[in-house]
Image (cartoon, rainbow, N blue to C red; front, side):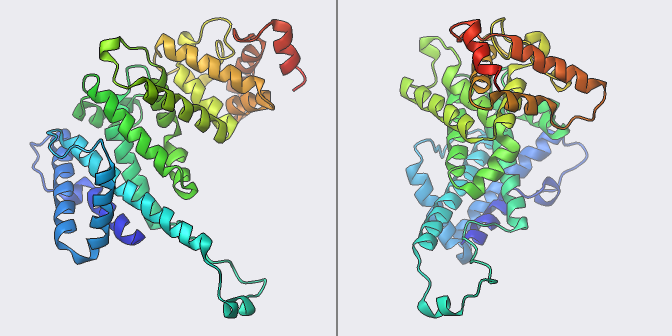
Length: 363
């Protein structure tokens, strides 16, 4: 069943050159859009006519019934494509969760226990994916993030797609973020599904290895971006849930990676957080090309960076985030200076400078 679901995802995410023919007059955006529509149409046909996809269709229908966000009559081709990806990802998550639960409840028969030797490898859990399956899943996640998450981030929130690759630049021109609250609802949908996937450790690795910064950016925007009351895309309860999800995520991930992503979200050195925030003057050479983050995001990242710094081994996390991967050249001295500036800046939420330094200096 896992193979069947991933085969369906593979149909949906086939390369453009395989998906549709096109002439020299077609723009790259037209070719990509035609490929997305063709792949989605082919998938729906296969789900209805191919007997090997019968269980996949059942799981997808269950996911659709449980998804209050699914819209079958949307005219947005890219969002229709993203919805199909999200439904298949949810179907995969449901299937693997059920299989893993059965696997953990199983007790080996006495005959198997008698024949087991210390040298024998334990049986693999059902959520372990092959290299080819991981590649298919990674491609689906890339499409979901590029088409269903990044276009709905506000200007200055996260790294723009156009600065990442030529494909990202093309997607930016293809997908319109949409006005609030529709864009905010879509961002919430995509982010929520990615977090559901991440509840399985095997899938969490694939989600956060490449897309941690994007998920953090989405949660920051969903939970903390100020809105006029009439333009608010989320309810107060949904905002609170996003804030809790962000704090939970920051607590689970390796802290130097969290610090590094927060520094990226905070923006370039010229847009550093206000004085009094521990992230205020931090940054490395890699941040020089980052765009301007909005004031609310700079303040939020500064506060979150300060919390990372003041927790146990927080100084070590900041040092590793800034210095890891260095080559020993002149740029590394600039990084050392950046670390020093971060450490000497007393955060606003600290009760006093003495309390702050008494916490940080012993580290």
